[in-house]
Length: 191
Length: 253
Image (cartoon, rainbow over all chains, first blue to last red; front, top):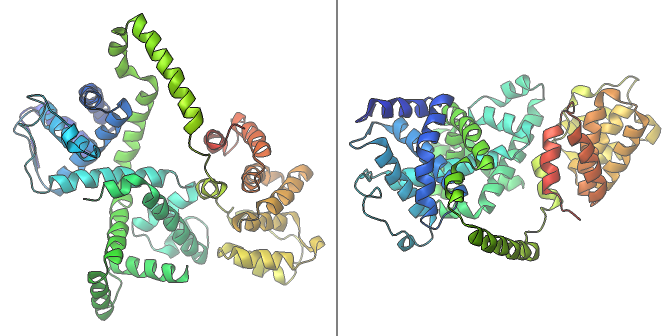
């Protein structure tokens, strides 16, 4: 369930929940400049801001999936609070993050799971980033495997033998896990 | 490797609820007493949740489309740029030059061939395999080993055959097994000969792509680059984009 002060905010959030291309684009166009301004003015770069934006989208997606999202302020205020929290977790020393009055503190999400969800959103992005670097066949096999499709069915769908799929699935997953583990962000994103 | 394979399999069976009750209890007791195993299970569980979720996959695809193009055109940077005076631009240019010099001195080494191969190499599926003549006894075993991913065994079985018993299709899979087994130079030799002979017109593109990868593995980067440039220029090549991406990761000298 999504409850917002403004009906337009609700439309945007529902668009994120259903991964609607048009609504996500609108969300990006409307809020990205503010996120860039915030991150850049707190020792970050525009690329950092884009990462923060993506983490915020994954965060909202998970938040809506895990229960209800009730906003008592505007989406803009809530989002800035979420982004502030995300950026705080990215800075090695959170004392570096000195906020000006009104920079999202008032609308901070007080839910007990907020930190876990923020770290989890970061890991979502990290996992997908490394997954996208695998070869086509690896991605296809793992996608089906993670979706709990049986190896025999994967083999049939991809015109391969089950034995080969089993071996390949193992190699692909090991490559993925190793590549994630070697990424320094992985340790930083474990809370 | 075998041990790791077994552990991964057990974690997957646990996460899929496929362990029997006593097995599950044993496994949970092992997890409770082993922090490394606990972390391993947590990672596998999260990978399953994130990468097996069609909603997240769709959202990730949308984000890739929405966020990345903007990263290139820097649309959101323009208002700030207008405020920058010439003097600051001059200073910025100086700093940029200094940063570039530092970059040249400190730039990250090019990725190792193995890591590039892990990213870009996939053993070619067996759809293309057809034996036109009566195959020698060892061939099905070599192909079977290749298909099962037992590349060292496949290489051994292929090598045990007299060269004239290997038709071009089998030569191709022999080269694939060699590449998968880390013997890029030998794989490149076979693929280069196949490419020059034109004996497998239907496989010409995979041969080119895998020849470039074999050269990378063999340390023949200039040859690999030249071939990758050719592939990247060919709009009809099935590996045009990966070739262009791979080129960016190769060293410039």
